Image 1 (cartoon, rainbow, N blue to C red):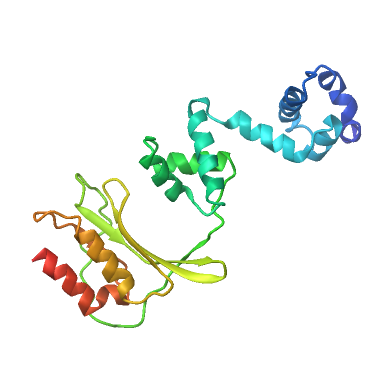
Image 2 (cartoon, rainbow, N blue to C red):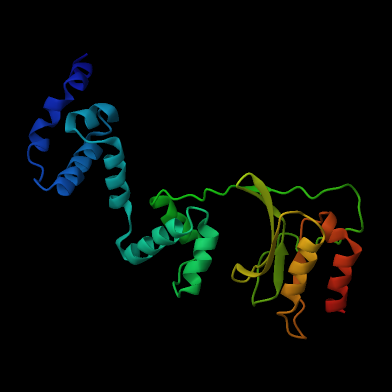
Length: 239
């Protein structure tokens, strides 16, 4: 009962600490946030915010600021700018690629973590495209066998088709990813999942290879990858 009574009057519990916070509005909000964090394990958050006259959005803003790694200050600012420049349509993979092209040396997992600190998420939701249409064509053996170890570029590639919904319309993305450095070797975007989606992508990817380069190309064996034209493209390059 004693603790419950304190919850109802937590304004008094915090009065001394709150009375000492800085006069600058931003500084005061930051110091109030520290007080709330210190007392959060003892009292409900809504009572602490009420007692300190701290808006919930302001509280979480300062929590994110406190969690920001100082060594990534420039990167965080650039990530946020790229995100808003593209109206929230870029996820961590595309932002990582943009940063890489600008000379930033961050891996995709770090970009994903930093976006989490900024509470940034892509507004475009990818959907796993199901390409199975029964036993169409001939399936290739699974040479990859979950062995993702790679020692050089263009040794192992993976590909898949992903379905997006943009402005209430379906869009299909077919990329080739190099497992060596997660580079997008080639890609094709279309409003349908026809065979040309993967054959044109494959043509772009193969055009980047030297004569001696014959990477293993792994897919989910959907109907496009079983198609005779797609498999002929591979044989012509591999033989």
